[in-house]
Amino acid sequence: MRHIIIALSALVLAGTAQAGTSFKTKYSSIERVPGEYTNTVQNGEMKATIDLSEQEMCITRTDKREFCWKISSGKKGYETPTGSYRPTRIYERYFSKTYDDAPMHYAVFFHGGYAIHQSVGGPSGPASHGCIRLTPLQAYRFYNMVRAYGPKRTKIVVQN
Image (cartoon, rainbow, N blue to C red; front, side, top):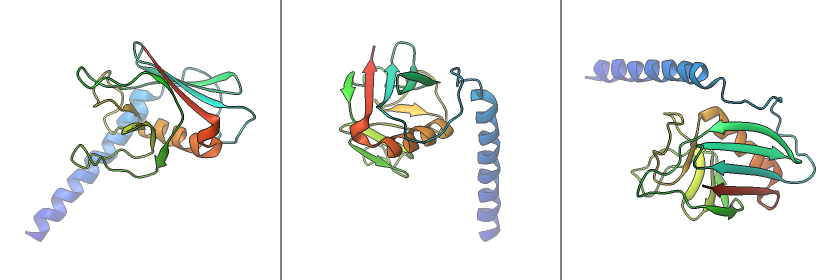
């Protein structure tokens, strides 16, 4: 029995490794705005503008647009709330208390239980329970930029 469990674990890990490779291939062209990533804090504010109709999130720092990423937002019946927000809390590793301990790593909460976080499946249009989903790399980058700037200098704007 133990050998079966070990074999199944190896298959799951192999599948995860393959999924990681396909992410890189599938989403490598999403960063359409040129520029090298750094989490060096710049003067001014960092702003994440989420366009629900385009399913896109763009990051602007010191009035310069640096990144635009495809996202997944809330599906019908679970719409993502629109408005202007500041991060309320952030977690490197987080599991949903509402949806069966679903992983929400690199979570930046902005309105109650709504967060911008990593999704293993990658962006696929409206598909979440209201959160904004990013690829693992994008979520990691955004999380670290929010940590570097802090909630008072980070603005999250969600619009239709």
